[in-house]
Amino acid sequence: RARVIYKHALALFNLGAQDPRKRMRTDIQETAQDLNELEVQKREDLYKSYVSFEKKHGDRQGIEDVLLTKQRAEYSKRVEKDPLDYDAWFEYAKLEEDHETKETTHARVRDVYEKAVSNLPPSSTEKQYWKRYIYLWINYAIYEELTARDLHRASMVYETCLNLIPHAKFSFAKVWIYAAKLHVRRRDLQSARKLFGKAIGLCGKETIFTEYIALELALGEIDRCRTLYTQYLKAMPHNCTAWKRYAELEHSVGESERTRAIYELAISQPALDMPEMLWKGYIDFEIGECENEHARKLYERLLDRTGHVKVWISFAQFEGTVAVGGEGGLQSCRKIFQRAYQQLKEEGMKEERVLLLDAWRVLEKDRGDAKS
Image 1 (cartoon, rainbow, N blue to C red):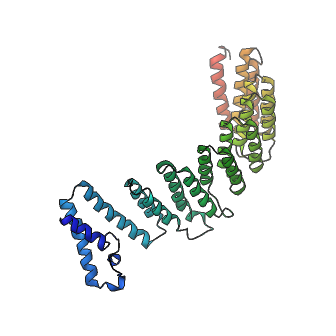
Image 2: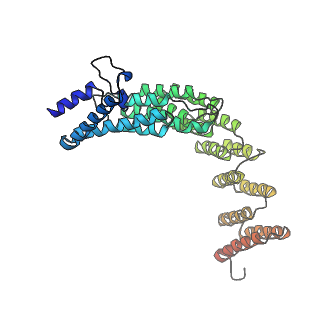
Image 3: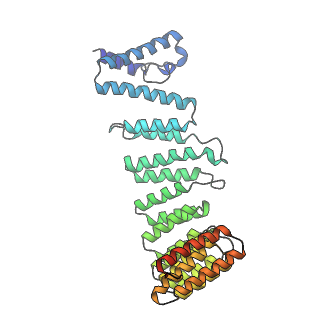
């Protein structure tokens, strides 16, 4: 009977409201001006008495409901005080997700997310203010897809988010990628491709290209991959990783001449971020194709550009490996070491000569005779 009375009072005076001033009667027209301090205090004490009663006499569900109501009130107070406190919104949404029931039909969670994302960052020119805010949209979309099982609504969440971002100032590649992958899961490849294409135009980050290429590669669309790599390298001709992956793609489909042409075009670029990776990939490709003479020429071309000791050692080791097949020979390997030693000596590079002699010693120990 006591619980029935308390619950009636809870509903009548709106005792679950976070602000005591908002605990007004629902059966008559009552405003905040109608409440004096004494009445506010009475209703506050009544709510505390209800909480205490449930803790003492309530079952587990009743106690959890009281605590949940209290937590909701605390989070509501936090976000009302500072609507741009995105961490509070995250916690509030997580609270509602963890205590979601069939009766609520996702309404409470959606309401929290909708209120959260309505609080735009204070600046539309500074990306740092948006970094935390964007994750509210991402979490909202993930909730719609995985919990609510509403893929269309999740797609609309991403679309709304993308419309809000000031792409002329900055963009977020992850949002484009997540939205496009959602279209793939909805089996709507056309929409996914359109979104990736739009992302390349408005965002143009490396991850957009790599994810789009990965999608087309998984679908076996080699020609589309070639087109994308062409756009990728036009936008970032200095990117050695992109050049190498493009060459590896052609090699994987048996296009050796295309692979060779791509490597040649790559090493001819005036500026590269990691040229050593490209040269190594090109040489390894020629060795894998058993084109040892091509590999030798590449080593010589590379030595014209740089006399790094590691290049000399790699060249000598290469000659040592092909000697087993009857080409070159151990003498060729020694000649490379001698050339290298002489050049490094002329340049006065003592530490590099030590490294070279150490590699030479290992070779002679493994394959040389007592005299050598």
